[in-house]
Length: 480
Image (cartoon, rainbow, N blue to C red; front, top):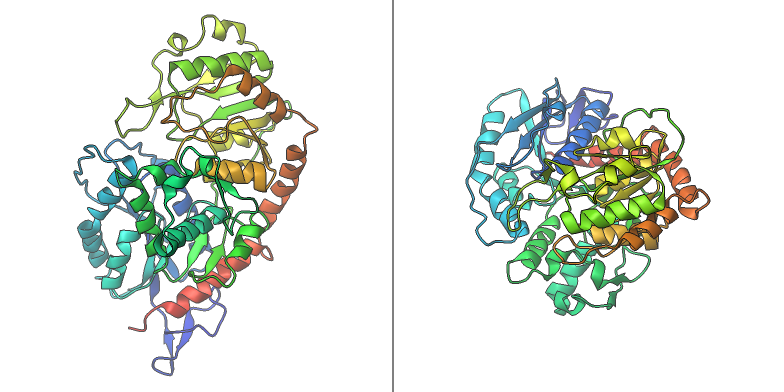
C-alpha cells in the first residue's frame, strides 16, 4: 500500500513505499455507483463534490443507473472538470410478481456487465489511476466488479448511523442466533438494538423485513452481509446528532465508520412571516389516494394554520412507478376546500423542497422522514411531524421522536401499503403540537441547526472525519 507522507490536499507528490522513491502521482479516479432514485443520486453528487473540492488529486465518475419510469433531473448531473456522469444503457428486467425491493436487487445485478465495460473504458487512459468504488447501500453486487479490477470498495450510506447499526445487529441475530423477524410483525414486542437509545418496537421495523415470501428479508440480509466486505463506510450524518449510534460502533467487528454529513445541496434562506406556515411533503415516492387526501384536508382546515401542501397521486396498485400530480385536485379534495382555505393555504404538485424549507415563513414540516429530508429539516431548523411511508422511514421517525426528541408524531408506524387511514383528528392534533412555538422540539431544532452548519467547516467533526476517510482511502490504493 502507498501511504502519503504529506497533507493529501496540498501536495501533488507522494513517497512510494513500494519503490522507495518520490513519484508524481497520477490522477486518482473513483467510481461512484448510486442506486436509482433522485434521493440517492443527489446525496452521491454532493459527497463527490466535497471529496473533489477537498483534494484535487481526485476525479470522480458517477455511474447513472435509471429505472425506465424515473424522472431525469439534469440540473444535478452536469459534468465538471473533476466529476463526470456516465449513464449505463437501459436493461429490461421484468418486475413480474416480485416485491419492489427484490426487483431493485435483480435490476442492479443486471447492470454488472455494463458497469464492467464502462470501467474498462475509463481505465484505458494512462493518466488515470483507479482508486476504488464507492457504492450505495443497494449496489453491493458491484463489489465483485471492484474486486475484478483489484481495487477496494467503500460504502456511502445515505441513511442514519442508527439504521446502519440496526441492519448489522439484525443480520447478526438472524445468522448466528436464529432470530425470526416475523416475531415482531404486527406486534408490540421490542428489541434492544445497540445503535438506538430506546428499545425499538417491531411496528417501526422496515416493512420489507416481513416480506419473506417475496424475498424482502433476504434482500436486506444479502446487502448487510456484503457491507462487511468494504474498507470503510461514509455515513450521511454527524457525531453531534447521532452520538449514541456512532459510539455503539466502537469495538464492533464492522468496517470503519466515517460520519461526514450533513451532505446536502442547500440554498440560502428567504424572508417571510416567520415560522407561520406548515409544509406537507412526502418525498419523491410519496402519494395518497382519495380517502386519505380528504382526511388530510379536514385536519388542515380544522387546525387553522397556514399551509403549503405538495399533493401527489400514487401509482396504480402493483405498479413500480413514481407518483404523479393529480390532473384535477378538486376531484379528490372535499367539496369547497380550496375556496374555504384560499386565504391561508395552497395545494400544489411537485415541490422544490429544499427551497421551501429554507424559507423563513415555514414553521413546521409534515414529512415522510426520508433521511435526506430529515437532514434538510435539521439544517434549516424546521420542526417535523412524522408521517413515514415505507423503507426505513418508520424507524427514522422513531429515532427522531423517541431517541432524539427532534420531532412530534402524527403517525410513527404508518405504512403506505396498509389499509389504515390516518384520521383528521390525529392530523389536527399533530399539527397543533408541531406549530406550538413553545415546544421543546422547536428549541432543540434551533440548537441542532447551529451545530449542523459548524460540523462541515474546518475544525468541525464531519470535516475531520472526511479528512480521515481520504487518508485511509489513499493508504488502501494498490501500488500498480
